[in-house]
Image 1 (tube, rainbow, N blue to C red):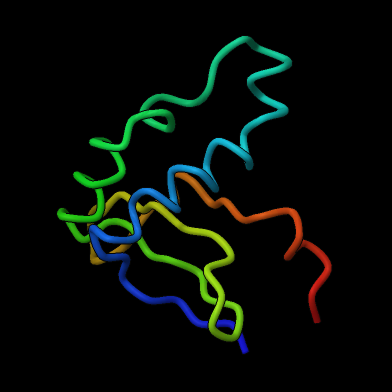
Image 2: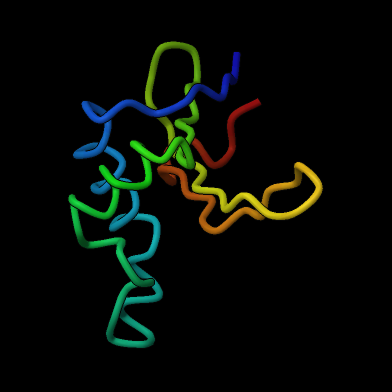
Length: 90
């Protein structure tokens, strides 16, 4: 079962590691990661703002979604990241 849950500060270290893994190809191609991805403080701050969700596959942390609130109660997905080991799950 896949669930989205609001991330907690204790999840920040793992979400940072997943982010670095998820954007490894970007780093190889462009020489840098998206802004904030390498910073533990950035992950903690987004979590504290309530803008970061973790993706749970059964009881395993599989990835995260960072959103930006916008007008009319809508949100924009800033980052959607997951471990490649969860790429082909049914």
